[in-house]
Length: 339
Ligand code: PAP
Image (cartoon, rainbow, N blue to C red; front, side):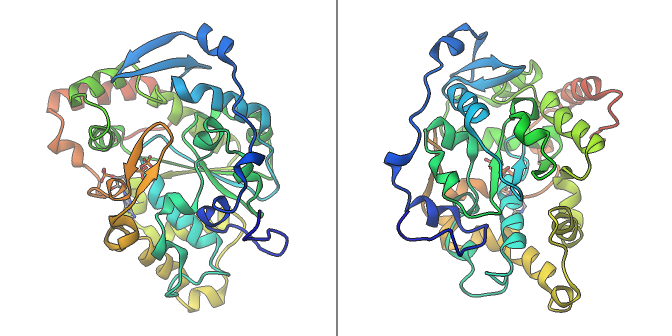
């Protein structure tokens, strides 16, 4: 690593700044695991081949990365892992968590804040993708504490993460109906399928990283049994009280706001910096694209409406009822509801 010495820098730092300086030759080559993948149950949905791996339907190209992650990822004390099903508020959570953890080096009201010049996905790395591409050396190059993200089910994470009191997981979810609608708008640009196709796949549990209910239940249960290690957040509640949730997030990761922070209005500044309108309006998010290795997404596609309840504009009442009933049945007895 040439440009950024990690010895004197405290994390999290913008991932893009570090990644650009990593010599890719030092990255571990992707492991093959082809024999394991070809033995897994498969299903074709939405123009993609999915493989059922440890209960989760995974885009085929990602399975080897997941296996590599399980075998090679070494957590460090202080690591914070953001986890989410797709389209549940990851971009927002990445921005809020980065701004909160990096507030010492980067005051949220500062004119030079990294989130003013780069997309939140460029600040916080997506582990699943880096392991898929054999670029996990980029994670190793990050100074501690690291802030990372995964769309993996909790059951797919290595025990070194899930049974590690020094590793914190922050999970975000939202009404699964809104998640589906958001996913459709996001993916329809890169895959030709209808909303009905996505809806039917999700009802069967066969959407990418599905079933959604197992994704939710894994982190929900862990947040109940290990509340110091797993924080369970809901997008809709965050929209109602973003400042309260930023305080909760800061406390959970062991960096509560001091009286001085509060007096200086730091929590409110973080919320302002990361607000939908602020981020959407930045040129860093209006232009450019995100190389997701399998797909390429424009930065602006991560900012659509940013509201709760948009499913009413995309689903019939019958579809909504069918999906609500499935989710309710699957979550029954867990204490988790979306009513
Ligand atoms: P990802 O899983 O691909 O990373 P993710 O960020 O989880 O996507 O989801 C995007 C949703 O969050 C979009 O919701 P919508 O389609 O219903 O509008 C997007 O608009 C919303 N979003 C992005 N940034 C923010 C933000 N700063 N505040 C609130 N919502 C946001």
